[in-house]
Length: 380
Image 1 (tube, rainbow, N blue to C red):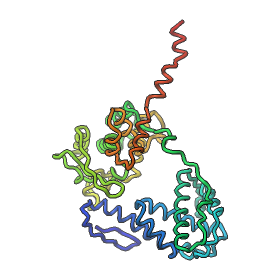
Image 2 (cartoon, rainbow, N blue to C red):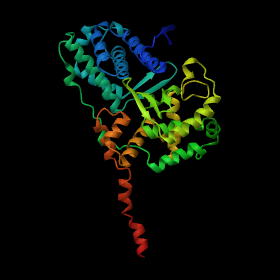
Image 3 (cartoon, one colour):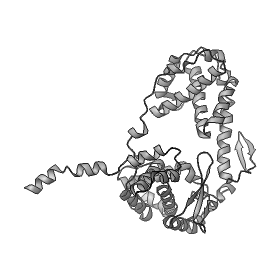
Image 4 (cartoon, rainbow, N blue to C red):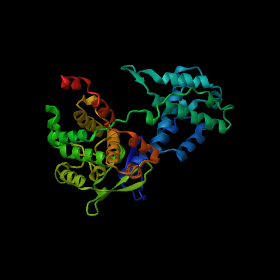
């Protein structure tokens, strides 16, 4: 298994028993983390070790991106360092940073402008993104304090960021009748534009299989995108997915999923020639013969969910909301939240309980009982 990194070929000997594409993705994340660390000061080594051993690979990567962004902010937007590149920032300069400087950085991140000489782009972060950036920097300064590289733990002075708790947010999910509208759209092409129908003619079986897997199993986007043909054992009625921590999970197949997968694999997929060895085992291929990208999956989900919702394409749902759809639908059918938690790979059953508390039709039922004008007309 080979990957191109900085014009060099990175070879990986896979002895883990996992499919090559899963290991390759893990290695890509690992190598990107290692690459960013080379851009950062060497006195942060303990921080790098902490991230490597205590957080998920994607979280580690996000934290490193945040810290690099923070150091570039120090160079370009403040006089807190004399360094011209992130690697040259000194621990003494970090020691001089106050909590207020971090608060100003978080405020800067709310909305900032990047001018690359040709395009001026305005970036804006939600409170959830700001909270992660704050966490990334907080962990850094706590580690520097533990290492004795800074004299004070300044993190207690960081301003709080208000992020709604999961239970405070409206859970967005398709209702069962909307799922049927979505599946009808992908089956018959209803609601599609002429341009979309031309593309749909060549991908409708693939797209339907993708949607069915989402609403049946509540898969995460990465879990679905990494599925292989070899992941499926139809004689045993099961398939294998790899969870966030690389954990292997065996999922049962039902008749509906077997039907749509068989339709796709025996027709559309056979007409596409894989463009490289990495794509030969990929379950879902693009028309160009490559493993379908996460971005392409997001776009097709938004398209078909927007038809179900009767809204614009931009207002369609994300794959994660189809995960919520599976959860609410399963619980609505009377299934145990513990069983649903196991299916969806929720580490805490309290996460699943949020969907149990979400009664999809409760608001509609309430207002339907208050038909003032209809009742008035019926009385006349």
